[in-house]
Figure (tube, rainbow, N blue to C red):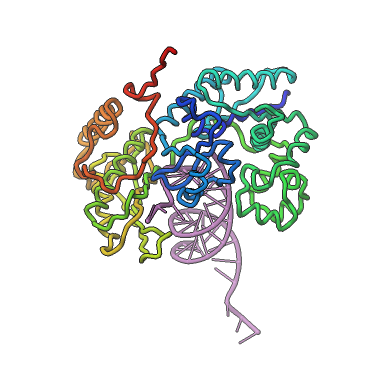
Length: 427
DNA sequence: TCTGGGGTCCTAGGACCC
DNA sequence: TCTGGGGTCCTAGGACCC
């Protein structure tokens, strides 16, 4: 039987590439994208990486570097990135309908039915097509396991010699590549495990692959042992085509400025619950449990306060007004006056399918009432989908929103709003 | 002044039971 | 010198991913 191969397609500097796709002026100049609230750096162009700006750093700490080098900064525009991701995935699906969308900018594709010699050519063709149809540059790594495909992708991206595509055909190929992959860059090895491995002289992916079985069995968890097997070409992580239902859905945000009044916290919490409930209904779920939290800014030397509370609805629900009621009662329990709050959020868990909600003996309304609530929510979701997500919303969310997150450098919604369509001008 | 958000899975430890 | 032991379930916290 022919061995299955995995191709991992990963968009290069994805958020930056999305900004560049609609703004060619940004090609060749340093560009970085900031997190929500314009707080951290979450994507960097090659030019910004070369300046030594690390992923996740605080924007204010590198202000001078950005100014001195003319770095173009953008607020995260997730509407744009989500839409562009969909376009990239649709393009990839033309080549391999059986694929696993692993993240907003990555997909695993099973590569079967290709003669060995044409595999690389095929991936180069995919790469070129994605670039032509969407404007997004991608790299592709091909190998017999997902972990090896990740490592191949990493090298294809970093070493210009491979021109964006690298296939590991056999063990010797793999060893040649793995010796250049730092152990911290192996899929599944984070900072804590990397530090542990280094204490035993394991510094590269090849060192980890060659670690003695006995040592691996005694010192690594089941996850670590699985990673070692995958590096050895034994596939342990299957392709996951179906999009799994989320087991928890969260909506949490830092505020644009610290707030201390219960009224403002309630408005923010109501809005976060509204957004979370939209996601909940989007996957056809209802929540049997809510967790609500508030906290002050731990980076400040001001008095600190952090609390969360669990609320259990009498019946699992996705009805926004009801969820807001539960969340606000939890919030009032944990709120303490006198603190400057920096962040709040809600997490829905113990999710059940909306169609299988168990009615409580003591519920105030029967099945008919529930169905009416659901229809109302669906109507509002449709309106907001068409007119923008704040078109219809609960009054509890407030209107002034002085705590709204900062987005000072937001690019237009080029691909999802008619008013933002780029206009081509003849020269 | 300014430091993100949303997920999954594993593990250790406590409670409880027989 | 003595204070059982083993299984299950639940949860908080940690590690990791993008």
